[in-house]
Length: 216
Ligand SMILES: *[C@@H]1O[C@H](CO)[C@@H](O)[C@H](O)[C@H]1NC(C)=O
Image (spheres, rainbow, N blue to C red):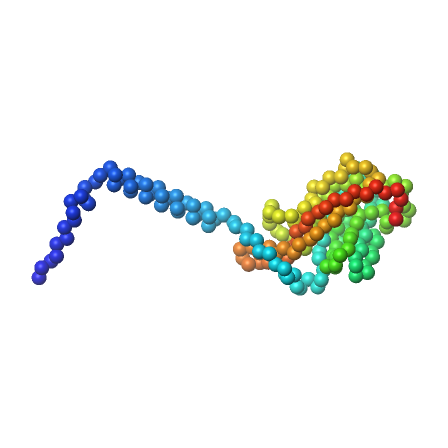
């Protein structure tokens, strides 16, 4: 039986500089592809999806709020949180799950609180309304350390406006001014790689400063 003989053309067996060059280029290119795919695989990717529906249907129509604010020139006895909304809620001096920390040798106060609000238009404010005696000229200058809505995200530095007011500093403003922040909050679902979902909110802020002559 004839064994077929394979004869390679001679030019395929000769090493050439061009051939070597092409081989090296291929290796470099393959390495580049490998590394770029690898970094793409390792890097975390945040995918944004927009819902029109309310994604968090189990919340019972409530949103958790977490607030941390310092008023360096208002005594803790005067500081209180009031919550009001269109469903008829009107609460003055909400104290559940909140803490007042004296600052500035007792001249100031830090208010840290967690409370929930209804998913209807409304407002909450830090004021002196709950104090037994209203001060003549309450100094409402403040720094907001944190204002966040919904479930807490465990991850740090997620892009987005989850704590848009964090760091807002109104220490240099007129002491007697009252500060209104008009917030629009948007439901945001954060899902990690394990598929665990957290129902949080992002918000935008418009700031309005009102001079007050008297307390309402
Ligand atoms: C509130 O903010 C202050 C100042 O940044 C910080 O020291 C404090 O730990 C915060 N409190 C909470 C409950 O996060």
